[in-house]
Image 1 (cartoon, rainbow, N blue to C red):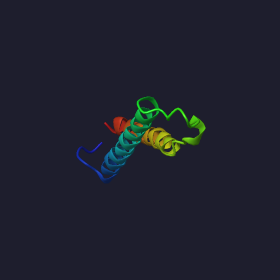
Image 2 (image 1 turned 120 degrees about the horizontal axis):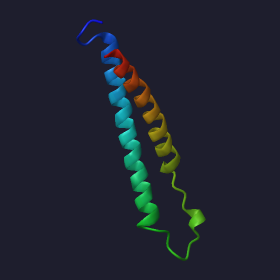
Image 3 (image 1 turned 180 degrees about the vertical axis):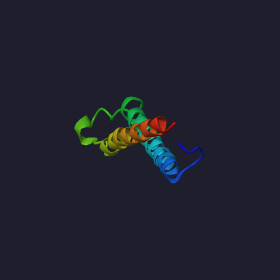
Length: 81
């Protein structure tokens, strides 16, 4: 196997980096939603059903898909060595 950075390895590193950034961004959004839910609960006069956390599904998807893409490409990088 030739040593150094090939186009394939560069692709794997770039995709892994981008997927990791997506996981981090989704995690930050999940933390923000958790703080909103637990630290700042809904006021008492209003039922909690009126509060919909619209960032929650997108954040969960970012974390799940980003982690799967990152793990797959990182595993391929490990096999390259």
